[in-house]
Structures are given as structure tokens and as C-alpha cells.
Length: 318
Ligand SMILES: Cc1cc2nc3c(=O)[nH]c(=O)nc-3n(C[C@H](O)[C@H](O)[C@H](O)COP(=O)(O)OP(=O)(O)OC[C@H]3O[C@@H](n4cnc5c(N)ncnc54)[C@H](O)[C@@H]3O)c2cc1C
Image 1 (cartoon, rainbow, N blue to C red):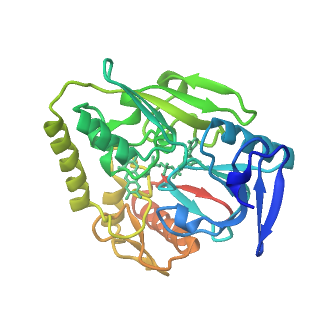
Image 2 (image 1 turned 135 degrees about the vertical axis):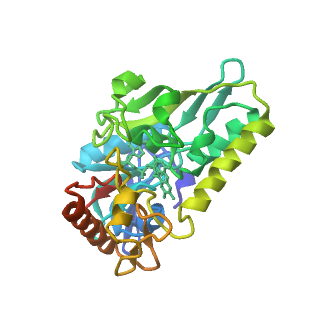
Image 3 (image 1 turned 135 degrees about the horizontal axis):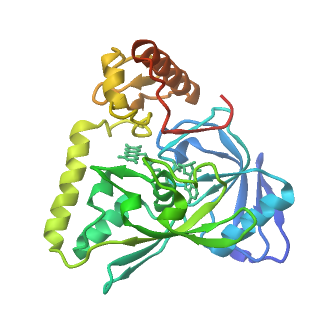
């Protein structure tokens, strides 16, 4: 049996080796057991999801949520996995990955872009640059999904999602759709009320400025990417900045001044090029990274009396 033979009227379960696959009623959606999460995160660490599903549309998303409710399972949301540290023990319950929720609509008259949660932010940045739309040049080096960026209020080069968001469509755990404005999302530095809220961002509308010369917008976008590649270590798995900046300081400066650049636990290392990055130098465990985060926090607090707050979202048991 394969998923193309469905939709089916009731959940159908089959076993493949020691894994189980459940096909949800009325959809082509397959929920799989024991799915490794390491390859779905930018750190490339973490154990399996008890159950994993990657819906392709709203109906499949709603069916997945309904199934989790009927089974009494907790739900964890994963976008591009670029700001996550998943436990080596994996995650219980249902992990919903948004990466297959894809579409974008460009309103050439108004410069409004309606984009699905699973679209990669860098791809969207290049697409609007090619149209000569300004406003997303800064986002090209952020390897998250649109949904994850809306939740995190992702930002770089003094710009952030809150600057361009018109509204976000969110789905509540009970399956209700709601449209929220930036005010309702209570945006501030890398935060929104969506963090830890169980509401799933399904789509965002961004306001951009059309009418510029595409070559200029492409050049500005390229320059942002090159600047990041010069100053940040993109060559090994990481989650970008591990800690939030405790303004007026930057976390990277505090860590560097504490003499921690290059410090390593297992295969997890404080990057030489940018001290607020922790790199998986090959075969690191989530626990190595977790221990290193604690070590850095401890040493920076001892020296500066400041507790660095992780920006990375740690999920599962540590
Ligand atoms: C090399 C590198 C560079 C980076 N540079 C930057 C940077 O310059 N600026 C910056 O802000 N970040 C940066 N990041 C971090 C990361 O890319 C951002 O935080 C990004 O917004 C996370 O998006 P994501 O889709 O990967 O979310 P994930 O990591 O998958 O999830 C992050 C959080 O959002 C939740 N979530 C994800 N999608 C949804 C959804 N659709 N609905 C509800 N909740 C959801 C998750 O449950 C989790 O709590 C960088 C990361 C890397 C690896």
C-alpha cells in the first residue's frame, strides 16, 4: 500500500519493519513512527519523534491535529529546525513539520506577499529581490521557514519580521483559524506571544516595496549574504546565535571576553569565528551542546554577573 491509494474513510495502519505508518482518513497524509529528527534540524542532532507528520495543506494539518487529540498526544511544531536543540532521547507525542506547507502569492500592484509557513525564508528573499521588491534583503542568510521566522521575530542587519508583517494566520490546537496583527503578536526582540503557545502559523502576509531595480535589490541581498558568510561560520551545523544579546552587550562579545572561543565539549565547540555560535564539529550529541550551553552560561555569569538567555529552543528531556 502507498499513500497515493488514499484518501481512506478511517485511519489505516501498516507496519514497515519496526516502524508504523498511519494514513489519516480523507487525506493522503501519512503519520510515521520513530522518525529521526537529526536530519530535520540545522544542528544535525537529536533522537527520533515518536510520531512525525509533514502535512501538505490545511486539511492535512487539521486532520493531524485531530488525530493527536483523539490519541491524547502532545504536539511539537518544527519549521526548518534551524533554531532547535532536540534531545538525544527524541520527542514523545506527535511532531508536526511544516516544511511541506508551500505556496506564495505576489500582489504586483500592492507589494503584498502571501506566503505559506513552510516556505524557506531565503528562497522568499531571493524571489522578491528578483521582482525588484525591497524589504527582505536582510533575511537571505536566515535558514528558517516563514512560520518559524514569524514566531521568532527573526531579524538581521537591524531589520526583523515585525517590520514587514501585515498579519499571520494561525491555527489553534482545537483547529480554529485566526488572523493576528503584529500588535496582537506582542513583538519585541526575537520574541512573540506565539513562542510556546501551541498555535501553529499557517501563513503570513508581508508588505514589501515594489518598483525598485531588481539588479539593485539582488546586489543588496547578495551583499547581506556575503557579509554574513565572512563573519559567521556557515560551514558546520549550528543554530545560528545560541544566546539572546543582553543589550547593550552582545552575547558573542561577552563569551569571547570570557576566553571561551574554541572551547569544546565532545564534538560541540564554541566557534572561533563568532563566539555566539556553537558548532557541531561532527558527531556531536545534543547533550554535548546542552552541556556546552550550560558551561558558557556559568562562565559568563561568573565573570559578568549576567545570565545569558538561550535564543535556541531546547525541546525534549536533557
Ligand atoms: C546559520 C544560521 C544563522 C542564523 N541566523 C539568524 C539570524 O540572523 N537572525 C535570526 O533571527 N535567526 C537566525 N537563525 C536562527 C533561525 O534560523 C531563526 O530563529 C528562524 O526564524 C527559525 O525558523 P525555523 O523555521 O527553523 O524554526 P524552528 O527552528 O523549526 O522552530 C523555532 C521555534 O518556532 C516554532 N515554530 C516553527 N514553525 C512554526 C509554525 N509554523 N507555527 C508555530 N510555531 C512554529 C517551533 O516550535 C520552535 O519553538 C540562524 C540559524 C542558523 C542555523
